[in-house]
Length: 256
Ligand SMILES: NC(=O)c1ccc[n+]([C@@H]2O[C@H](COP(=O)([O-])OP(=O)(O)OC[C@H]3O[C@@H](n4cnc5c(N)ncnc54)[C@H](OP(=O)(O)O)[C@@H]3O)[C@@H](O)[C@H]2O)c1
Image 1 (tube, helix red, strand yellow):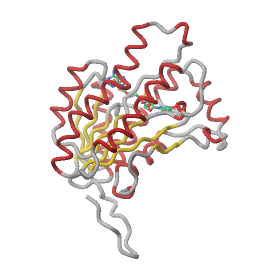
Image 2 (cartoon, rainbow, N blue to C red; image 1 turned 120 degrees about the vertical axis):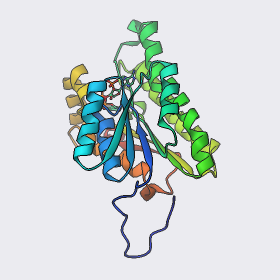
Image 3 (tube, rainbow, N blue to C red; image 1 turned 60 degrees about the vertical axis):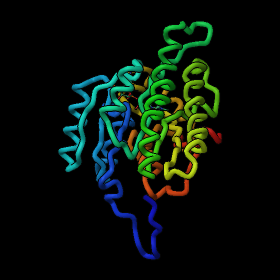
Image 4 (cartoon, rainbow, N blue to C red; image 1 turned 120 degrees about the horizontal axis):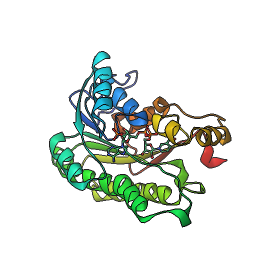
């Protein structure tokens, strides 16, 4: 997978040519932008989520841009569905664990069902999806996994206790997988987005997201494309010596 560049060469724009990329939660927001960019780079993209109509729209927009994509419906809260997705996806070269839920609840008000749902979707699903796909990547000697965390694991946000804990778990998985698959040609990394304007955040708490963006040193929110660019960089051979790393894409929010 890795080819060193000679002086004067530039990376081929079709850097994912011949590869299959699976992006969870790609019917919306950050995941949809990552799917579009991976397809623009030549990957055959598997778009997934629960919503078939949004899935079809995403596939149509990728095809309209000249890319290749197909939709596979999956509910990440349901382990059987996660396993079917892994099976249907086949030989995946790039896995982006992006699907997530992010309800904010004060700790004392958190109910058990909501807590379990957070961990099922944000931790259990990427855990078993990745577990199903890593052996195939190792056998083929190549693969790139990108986990989508949050900058809220690095600074404390009231009401985000359970959500931030799920993403802290995902960051831990990133590091463990990076050493567990040592020497196999697989790289595993994570990106921690800051306040990003997506369908999900606009439906949930647009003002809180805007305020969080204002408090970053860049003094604004991110677009989904700005986060997707980091995901795609981590998935690509351009980051060939980056492994087990977490990249903050948060406008500087975690540094002050
Ligand atoms: N936006 C931000 O400010 C921000 C900041 C930090 C981290 N993040 C993280 O970035 C990721 C994407 O966030 P976003 O803002 O782009 O969210 P979004 O617009 O709400 O999109 C979420 C995606 O996840 C999928 N999803 C949710 N629950 C699912 C389930 N049970 N089964 C299958 N798919 C499911 C949705 O698909 P369906 O509806 O089709 O199922 C959708 O495609 C999340 O992991 C989030 O925690 C976001």
